[in-house]
Length: 281
Image (tube, helix red, strand yellow):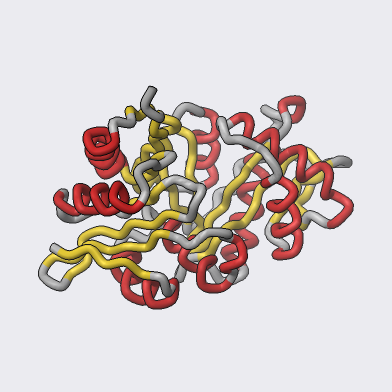
């Protein structure tokens, strides 16, 4: 088995594309990040960690990290690759914030990293990847979907920060940067019913699909079908634009979101675990 590093995102993508596309919905996050590294490298301020592990000339694992974010692992065909990736990262950087990967791969890496670094780990979030091909319009919520505009900037910043707080992410200055970039790219949508009541974003595209993320409805507007209507209409909009699939991740601790997305037509494709690594005392 051999581990290979890459500095050229295009070369890396061309080599891993077929492997990741065998499970496109499960790997939509890696495919989307690779797309961003190629077309919008300015989004990431540090050199990414891009690696493959090969056995007999075939890829058996793909690893990616865009600092300061956690390590992302693909579905892995040979468990020995987990140890190789962990050892490689430990030699180059003896501290990691965490790992996000399909459940078996995430658990295996977290255990190996603990044995190497002494860092313990804890489950930050258990998620489920979903794929949609056809929308079921189940919500009767009043209103309509519209593209966010410059005048929404402050609202988008506040909602973005509220969303991050709910999922346990730090805020710092990233919200302003995110709003600026998203408005420029035109990928934030609001559900409007006399006022803005819900938000959803189209994310990084894959060869056949696109991910929906950052779905947020303020507390006072929840349980009125706005999020369902917003995501369903945005999903149909993206399908109409030529995407074959829409993808999203849900927090398994939130049964409401898991239910509404499946009612819209999203089908589960696999579970992921996001582990945080805890520094040694």
